Amino acid sequence: MRRRTVVVASVTYLLLLALIAVVWPVSLDSAGAREVVIGRWTGKVIVTGSIVAAVVSLAVIVFAVPARRWWWLLLGPLRVIAIGAMAWGGLAVSVTDEPVTPIVANGCETGYVVTERAFLFGASGSVRRLDGPIGTSVGRTEVDDGHTPFEQGSYIAVTDGDTLRVWNTFQSATERLSITSAPSFVLPRLVTDTDFGLAGGLTAEEDTPPPPRPPVEPAEGPAPSPAADARIELARMVQRALEAAGAPVTDAAGVPVSAPLPSDLPCDGTTAYDLSVRTDDNAASYAAILDAWTAEGYAKDRAMQEDLRYNGVVRLSARDRSSIDGLLHFSLSADCRAP
Image (cartoon, rainbow, N blue to C red; front, top):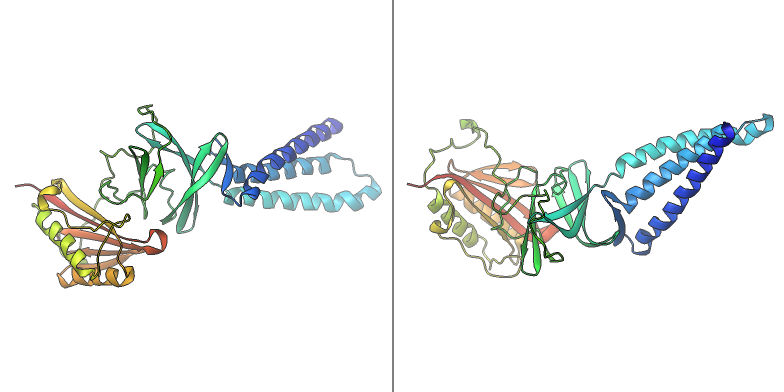
């Protein structure tokens, strides 16, 4: 029985070494730019799991081999090392979790996947183009609060001609998304088929609704005003922000940005507008815009990497993501009831 166990463990060990020898060089040869992707596993996860399984197989061999007197000089330390290696391997598997999520647009896979990793209050991901079992890195994502937007489905992917535009949440999966803002990234379109009925992400018509707004206590800021047509005030504050920037304001493509007309904004219970802009001096413009909102009588608050303003009608969420995508992000929203 022991001999059979040793033979099975030995064969398993050799097969795992062969798998590692095939998968690992793909990533090493390209410094991580290319990675084996099989189902929901990346090459890194496959290699880590294979190493742990190989260690377990080796431990089985070490424990199954009879230890005769002087053999203890060798097998004794090996068994201690095997136990420690298995404990280390279990930890390595737990921290190497890197789920693979296909980007879905119009109910169809797009030929791209995102591998995401969360740690404490941050998370990052790699956008990869699939060519068979090989995924080539074509971009990266960086988000807050340790959430994984693609695995959680809090993204929008839209095909437009020869391009694929993708929006993903930054702070949390409940964050509002809208295709009126600049996309998080743009990729060449690879797949022309649509309506395969696959689930994944949000549709452009759905967007993500703004998260429920908790009641504001008088000590914390202005009390909410009765819902009315807030489009004029929201459009005015967009214009005020652009004027306060103190420099030419452009979008990600370098196109000058202007404020919307009130009539161009929705008013179906809520109204909202998103700005993703840059200036010659993002830091100075960001501070000036927030000061302008405060000067207009808006109460100020601060969340994790997010500045907030509120006057009882219009709410502003502002984030300076210059170090990530070179843009300042402003999201304005309000309750709205058309007369």
